[in-house]
Amino acid sequence: MTDRAFAPTLALHLGVIAVLAVLQFVLPDYHHGLLARIMVLAIFAMGYNLLFGYVGLLSLGHAMFFSAGLYGAGLPVFHLGWGVPAAFAAGIAAGGLLALLVGVLVLRTTGVAFMIVTMMFAQAFYLAILYFAPWTKGSEGFVLPQAARAIDIAGARWDLTSPSMRYWTALLLFSAVLALTLYVARSPYGRVLVAIRENEERTRMLGYDTFATKLLAVVLSGAICAASGAAYVLIFGYAGSTLASIQYSILPLLWVLLGGAATTLGPLLGTVFMYYVIDVASGYTTAWLLIVGIVLILLVLFFPRGVLGTIRERWVPWLP
Amino acid sequence: MAAVSPILVTKGLSRSFGGLKAVDDVDFEMAPGEIRALIGPNGAGKTTFVSLVCGRVEPTGGTIIFDGEDVTRLAAHQRVRRGIAYTFQITSVFGNLTAWDNVALAVQRHAGKGPRGARGLREGVQEALLRTGLAGRQGVLAANLAYGHQRLLEVAMGLALKPRLLILDEPTQGLSDGEIDGFVGLVRDIARDATVLLIEHNMDVVMRLADRITVLNAGRILAEGAPDAIRADAEVQQAYLGAPADG
Image 1: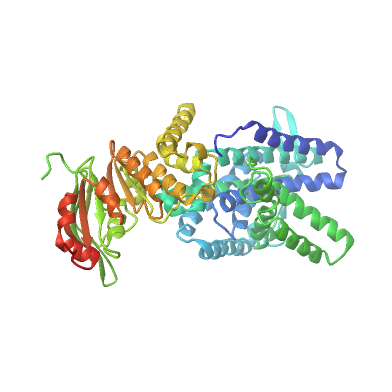
Image 2: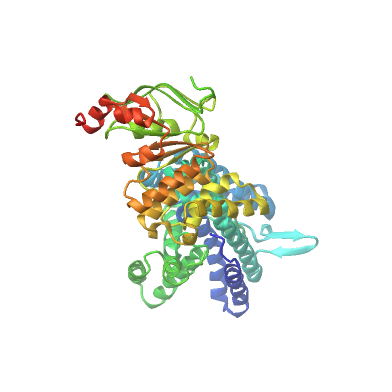
């Protein structure tokens, strides 16, 4: 974040995007589909990382922002027959608005209280989805019709039900959000976010309105997580209340911790890693949770700051 | 009354913690450009008083007027934007950021936007680091700086805010004699374009720097005047040293 050279950083990020683009032609069908899903969920992790990694606010309620995007985009398509672009925008708006309302209330707390209050809001949101089951279809969920999941652009049809278009769409959105988080992390605003994490009182005494700064971060984080949820329902065609449960508040925390909090590429790495550890482990044994647990313990022991966080600390200090 | 209008005035400023009156009905004035030392025994209310001025603590009574404007109800960050800067008694730099980033945080808010802002930021940071002698250490994480350099970084952040009133809370605490000499020169340099309010225990530093001295005791102003007058004041010696001076 200092006035260090930007070239290696840019090359690294473009390289990662290029590798993801090439993988699309190399991977077998199964992994191809899995990676598309991982990229969409990595957006969720990046949104979470903005608040947890950079500002240091540990939320246990981000499932509500993800599912605000999921239902904010899914319900208008399912009930009102909206098109994909409008639904996507509605999903992001729903998440951003929810984050603004929740942020104003939860930012009065810090630390453990912040964790508990965010979790309570997320549970209330989850229960509301079940309560309105006539519209949301509750835990059973709903599937978007294939015909609705396509965009017509100037005669050409962008069909989100075809595997390759799913992959390209996921990669496009992933790259856009990666660029956004890189921009924020290197910007003066990103420097203030880190300063708040390090010492909020000192930041205030440098003339910053820390409440407003944090509120903007909550809204940004919520909107990015909602974009992930909206992309999820539009690309994969399913929304159900499980995706709003507490599990989906804890998963992004795990992904970010594994990959490296406050690193731009950590969220992707953590998401890929968790998915593949579960995938490989469950291929060998039904006790795959045991293997996942052991891997997590080893990582915490040897990579206490997450994979990229530890690499940055020990070997590559310029890593953003 | 001073000929020029004062930069800082407090009227009846009070703050109680429970039954304890930490600051008790203090009327205080500072002229622009002066270096004022605030001294007094431990627990006299010095830090509470300056915390009231910079907005970290809310008063239970009284008003604070900065440059003619009543700032009593303003939040701390709004007072910083009007030109009141505070450097912490306990070093509180951002340990996981480099010295450069620490100072950049103080500069970037008024550096503007776009390419011109970026250049202004670089120049502003460079200037503050040069003035405090930290230019060679700009890439070092603040947590890895020597203690004396952390204190200097704290001052660099304070002056990078381009304050009109800089409050230094025990800046020389824990510094070596050589570092203190450098520090005295630095404060004189800062005072050329800012007013300085200095809480200090080292009487040598106070005598070398202060234009005027205010003595606080038990939350009240005990004495105020030129350094020589304060030095000679028997009451001050009673409060500060706990015994009358011999000879």
